[in-house]
Structure formats: C-alpha cells, structure tokens
Image (cartoon, rainbow, N blue to C red; front, side):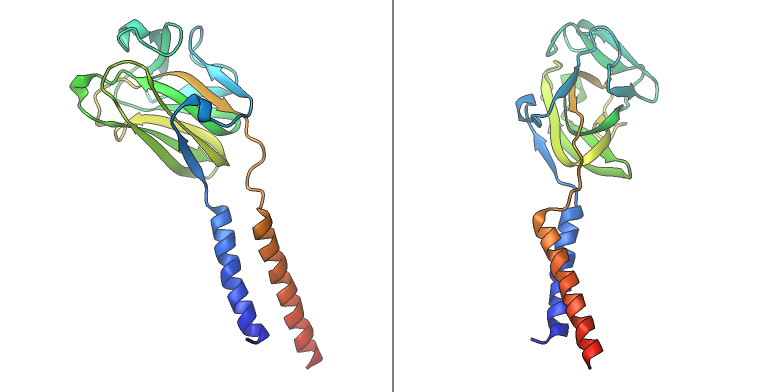
Length: 212
C-alpha cells in the first residue's frame, strides 16, 4: 500500500471518527436518581412559577395551580404544579446557563384523553437535537418521570403531549431538575489521535513531493 492509498484510507477513518464525535449523544433516564451527579436545581412551584436558573413559557402563558384541580390532588411534592393558561400546548423551559442533564414529572393524563405519549424535545444553541418520550399511564396523577443525560450543551427543552396540539389536556409538570453543564464537545482521545495521524501523513507526503 503506497502513501497515497494509506492517506485515502486514513481520511475515511478520520471522517468516521469526527462524524461520530460530533453527533449528540442523548441517553434517556427513567428516574431522577439516574440523572447526572452534578449539582442540581429543583423547581417545585410551591411559591413561584419557576426559579433560579430557568424561565418557563407557553403560547398562552403559565401559572401555578393546586394539584387538586389538575391531577386529582396527587403530585410528587408539595401541593402546587405548573401548567399553561390554555390547552393543548407545550411548556418550554429555557436555561440561564446550558444544562446537560434534565428531568421532570408530568401528569393530568386523564383516561378520557386516551393513550398518548409525552415528549421532551431537546435543543442546543443551533436547534432541535433530539427527543425522549414516555407513554402516559392515564391515571391523572403527576407521577411519571421523563428525563435524559446529554453530552451536548442543552439550552432549552419543551414538553408536549402528543404532537402538542392533538391531546385535549393541559400540560402539567412538577419537580423540574437540571444541572449546569460542564464544557461539552471536547474531542475524545481517539479522535485527537486520528487528527494527529492525519497531520503526520500529510507532512510525509509533502516532504516526499519536495524530494522528487
């Protein structure tokens, strides 16, 4: 195998390595204990419609209400939950500083609405990078967890029922948890090694041409 063939092979391997390095890795978790161990903020909506570190919004606005009026009086902590002024519509959560691990509880999934999935859409500074979903259990309580860990810097998430318009229920959430992410997108050692080999090969080819 001559140097040119070697460089072509190396280029293909390098492209695969860099491509995999650049893809966002989002791992769904199914309980709050599986979130990243970094320090977390917890918003339980007992006193305000949010808290330090994040802003909540929806098309019609948001409000806190008693769980007695939104989830048959059952939620994961306290007595209040967060919901929207109108329905059906998602709740958006925008982080003051990027996060890499986010989770929350949702409910108000009345049996009359039928079976549906709740989706948590995940965004970085460039747009949507992925989603995770959970099938609603239809018990009306705020008792189901949805969350993820990511190697990307997440700037916003949005929770919706169905496609955001086809489930005739108020979106209701409680106990939102999120971290402040460490720097992401640091190249892995394998990728750095591939880059190094690429530069060495190019240097060798240049010296060979000069010697001819």
